[in-house]
Length: 71
Image (cartoon, rainbow, N blue to C red; front, side):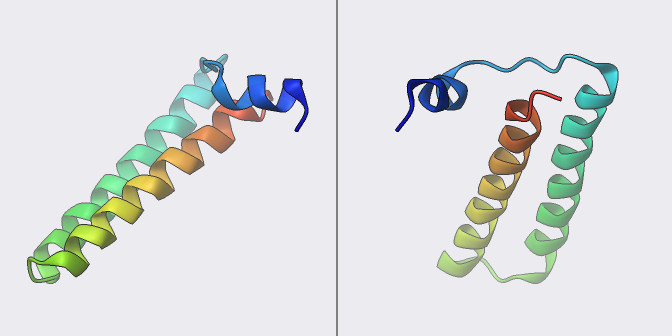
């Protein structure tokens, strides 16, 4: 693995524009909206917990994609 790739994965990538900040916020809000909806319709249990956890992963990876793109 290239050093530059590792550095890109582990360094902080602040949102450099208002548009990027808005994109990050949009991802978080859409994931929160879905989490709230799922919380209402899925019975408590392991499956619900996993669904919410994986939705967090969606949010994290989506925001990482935005942050790491450098655009």
